[in-house]
Length: 315
Length: 249
Ligand SMILES: Cc1cc2nc3c(=O)[nH]c(=O)nc-3n(C[C@H](O)[C@H](O)[C@H](O)COP(=O)(O)OP(=O)(O)OC[C@H]3O[C@@H](n4cnc5c(N)ncnc54)[C@H](O)[C@@H]3O)c2cc1C
Ligand SMILES: Nc1ncnc2c1ncn2[C@@H]1O[C@H](COP(=O)(O)O)[C@@H](O)[C@H]1O
Image 1 (cartoon, protein in one colour):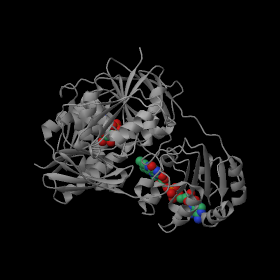
Image 2: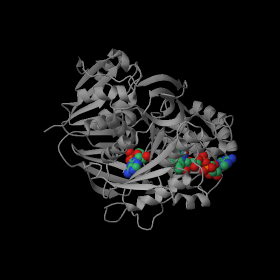
Image 3: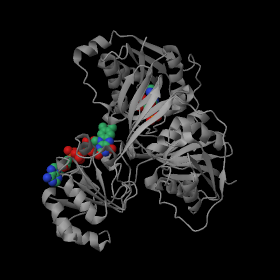
Image 4: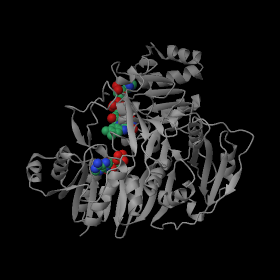
């Protein structure tokens, strides 16, 4: 029997987040899976058409409601539950959007949730990291019923956007939505740099950068390389970089082609976030720093000399 | 009484290097240092600060787990919690079971606010707060980095992928903590003595009417794949060359 999988799309009202295309790839690893993407929005059309183009998507369902303008888990969850009835597996991305929402969906369904799925072995069997990635656990659904999951997006490539489009169906769900949760604001720091979570190259700075001003040499190098900029928790806590730049266990888990760690010691919680990077470069003045144990290329020295030099060499 | 309920989980201390048992049945926990889940310490700290500002009258900590968990409840009492509740339970406890037990405690205690950690650093599930809010049919504000109570509502700043999001929620509600919400205080020695006299009530899951169900079987634990050790380059020029050769620059 082929599994029916529902994926809850992440979007900002206009653009589909790349995390959704990664969920599609994850779902598609299950042979014969039927993949439906749900778009809950105030106006679903633009996002729904992007979802329909993803290769591997069989069907898109939309639920339009003014209350869906901002993604509030308490508002979206009952709608997802209403859509979920015919499905075996309900997936969302393991981003702050998906983690917040899917567990509430699991709670309403009283279904088990598998967090941070890194592999689907069968319709009821999954692999996921625990202990900050220091162990990998295989779990299996024990009884009948649905499984809810969040997909560890660093483990999957994004499904390509093809030319053919899956059918889009409008759905109306009749559930009363709570008003106890109200959106006030979001500080979306606008930047022209690539998105940290999907960038092919990332340059990250740690406590050693010393100040927000110190980070400027990284921005400059990153722009030269077409890279996104990340930071360690120590750098964020010290106010050198905004929190959305944090990489690691409690920040973003990323899988770029190239990760350059600058003045970062390589604490286990930081390494959790970069394990899937294809190539890791470490620049640190302490030759004993743990970051060198995972680095493909290590350079011992003072970052304030090395970074401008690299920039010169690639200009 | 204005009360805050804080969920406390006993976990392997975050400084411990985790080792998977050779037979794949779990991770080594014998003789390993155990602590309060770091996010739960932050949850407790926030509750204590709210109380100290006059926003609540009582802070109650609760844990679901085996007898050993009382050590962490005592630590929480030493940090400043007024009372502790221990729901005795053995074996694998899934978020749904924990949330059902916490919901029973909520019905008894009628808290204004429930604060949990955003995730337990052992199972890394990150589910219990949201599951509890769903069962309770109340608001949730996860990944909080700032919390302001204003009478019947709370304003919560959340750490989301895009940056910082602010929500307004009606109380009572469930909050889950992110690391930057606060920095927990250290426990002082005299407080450890005082904590021994504070009330700690125990329950069983059965007495609360909660049946522990395991919906996910734990099949196998494995160590993660190791990265290959790389090479040292001598200067920036050698690094740039190496990266160019790999097509990365
Ligand atoms: C529950 C929990 C979750 C956490 N989550 C995260 C997370 O998600 N992400 C994260 O990053 N951390 C996280 N941490 C924090 C983590 O443990 C470390 O404290 C943090 O990663 C250290 O950051 P850092 O490497 O920038 O600073 P440090 O450890 O202070 O390292 C600075 C490095 O810079 C080097 N240096 C100094 N000056 C120079 C110079 N001029 N040139 C070159 N090198 C120089 C030093 O040799 C040193 O190695 C978490 C901690 C806990 C407890
Ligand atoms: N057994 C438990 N007892 C009390 N609180 C718990 C327990 N398990 C989880 N929690 C709370 O729920 C949060 C999230 O846990 P988890 O969903 O397991 O990642 C933790 O930070 C705790 O605050």
